[in-house]
Image (cartoon, rainbow, N blue to C red):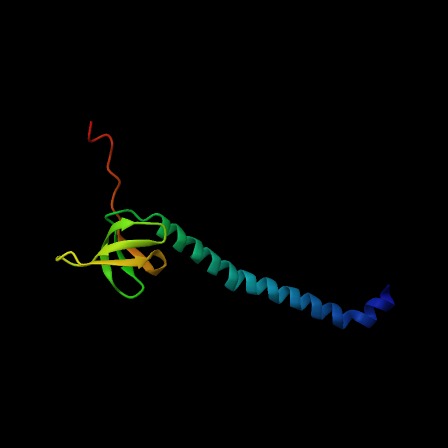
Length: 105
């Protein structure tokens, strides 16, 4: 066993370094990217009518209606409406609060 290890120690080190490199790449690039994607999906799924959002193109507007993969934005005081994909949303700027049930009773 000692003779085999002495003859193949370079290959063992190469394999160990390769596995270590893959682990480092996972923890520093792949894992944070997946976390960011998950947060973006949660943000897009939490949209509600009345939220004020910004798109990746810089358009700011209020959500008027929501469908499966699209939504309609009202972008100005003269009520211009634009239909966009949910994937084009960069951020929710002003979140509409849910109506409080205790105040209506």
